[in-house]
Length: 117
Ligand SMILES: [Zn+2]
Image 1: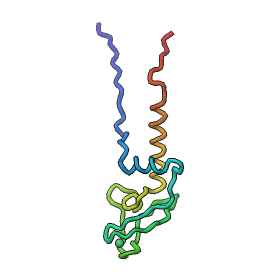
Image 2: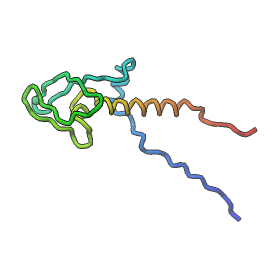
Image 3: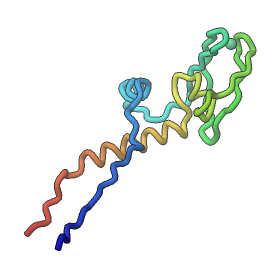
Image 4: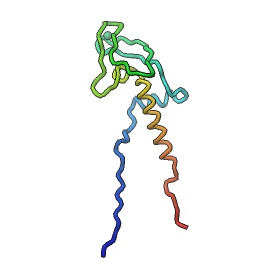
């Protein structure tokens, strides 16, 4: 009688590798986890503008101060700061911080729990 119990561990493949921007941001902003200003680069004219980001909402439209173009987020991005800004919007930053903390804590847990007496 083959009474083998097979345990399948599903590996979460939601864990994305940190992007280059992510790593760079973490390197340069270790002491200040939340950045509330972002430099937006206009894709039309290359104009740079430092803008304050709302912490409670995502800014969907942005009017370039250089050429007046109305920018919209790229597909998959929640706001113009995520698409064209140097720093992603605060909700995304919070999400990244939570993920980083998560990865850190799960990496620090003792790998093998020995419960055998
Ligand atoms: Zn522009």
